[in-house]
Image (tube, rainbow over all chains, first blue to last red; front, side, top):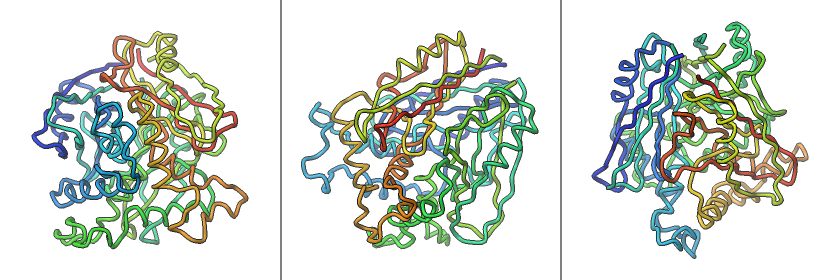
Amino acid sequence: MKSHTKYLEINTEKEREIINITDKVQDEITNSRIKEGLVLVNSMHITSSVFINDEESGLKQDFLEWLEQLAPYKPFQYPKGYLHHRTGETNGDAHLKRTIMGREVVCAVTKGKLDFGPWEQIFYGEFDGKRRKRILIKIIGE
Amino acid sequence: MKSHTKYLEINTEKEREIINITDKVQDEITNSRIKEGLVLVNSMHITSSVFINDEESGLKQDFLEWLEQLAPYKPFQYPKGYLHHRTGETNGDAHLKRTIMGREVVCAVTKGKLDFGPWEQIFYGEFDGKRRKRILIKIIGE
Amino acid sequence: MKSHTKYLEINTEKEREIINITDKVQDEITNSRIKEGLVLVNSMHITSSVFINDEESGLKQDFLEWLEQLAPYKPFQYPKGYLHHRTGETNGDAHLKRTIMGREVVCAVTKGKLDFGPWEQIFYGEFDGKRRKRILIKIIGE
């Protein structure tokens, strides 16, 4: 069994942003020379996500608006505000948004490629950005 | 290390449907002759899910009704409608529903079997059906 | 390739509770002597979760209150109540809460350690507790 580990650095321009990282993941699979196995891609932070969906700009905006409904920055349904903010943080919503979108994806590697359906693309979803963050790519196989 | 890859085809009768695929996953584990390892099961599409829950018909209906609340077909809380629909698509809600339910599961394979608790069953959740879709099963181990 | 399987038993004092299990997962990685690979950690039940977030008591309470909004014990938005309750069960909400939080995490093992960002911690989230449950840890690698 072989393994290959890569840390991607990312620093978004906006507080909330969705960035396509599919090519970077495929590059590491190629670098690893692993032909058959699994690749794990995860955010190393607890206010951002890695997920798979469609590369379509309207949909990416829909995701951000929908997340604002389900996990609002100002939790009007929860009058006292996020308890997490008692620590001085202001990113309670980002922890919840990331939970909806997920921390990680695990993908099949077949014949040296991401074994994907026609529309699958890997995204990094940032919900508390404008700072240096890291994404972990770990590939195991043969 | 051995690996085994299988693509299941699925074509639901309804637009939204939840289908138990546990036996099909176990069959591929048996076919692979892998005794110890991991199995990845994922939808290859971005409007359907693979998830683990209970085989109970009322609960499956509860999931569909709950998803309709959290990610409605007609987003009344979002008056202009899904931006994704500007592309001509009408399945914005399906992308969101699939996000709640998840794209994939990773399960342990122990002694050649799905290493499951008493009620765990694997489901394919379709939110934009009546067309041919694929599920990927990838098993790695020894 | 080596593999290592461990079943953790857990019995929460409260109906709903979030418990940090990071050290127990790291202990099993150490016991396995696997230096490079992947670790799967999953709930073996369908009303509880394994997820990664921050060890902060306010945030843990925020998660529980937020889940009660998204998947309420008494589904006021769904007047007839959960159909799952026709079976005699009363834990319909727990199946939905667990779906939001996720069943499993897959983490990288690098140099014999959980390869984590600065704030990542692994939690067991119980939504139908006060009974014996199990968590599965499966490590594969070399």
